[in-house]
Length: 184
Image (cartoon, rainbow, N blue to C red; front, side, top):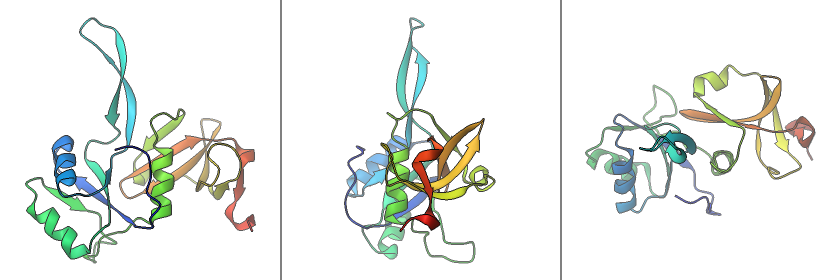
């Protein structure tokens, strides 16, 4: 998937896979005409001659995000017809309704997951919930317009964005962020 993001306002679903056949699942979603997103990062690997090369790999091998372009019942039918065992994140354990990630939140998350950006860290949703921080808007610089939580880690500041199943922290300078309550 490329990082040219649609300007529509459709929410997204987070889908957990119970196999590591991500390429096959991506092909399945493409056949169904669904737009999907898999967070990727560069990883150093050695070739057969022992030379290091950077290869683009998924951050998590069993997580994929799918844009909501149909009703929940239609999406349930697609999930049920696949041969791959998967589960769509739900609003809560008691509800059968799927959790919808708002378009703006997903846009920010996709921008922060761009593998060309440096100084970002990925973590589980549970680890991210333990981080204390201030809700901010990035006002200046290349990340202008992004929102998230300003947190400190290893004496550096990061913009933290959480979605079901995954969180990303991207290094920022503190002065370019303003608390969301102060913006007008």
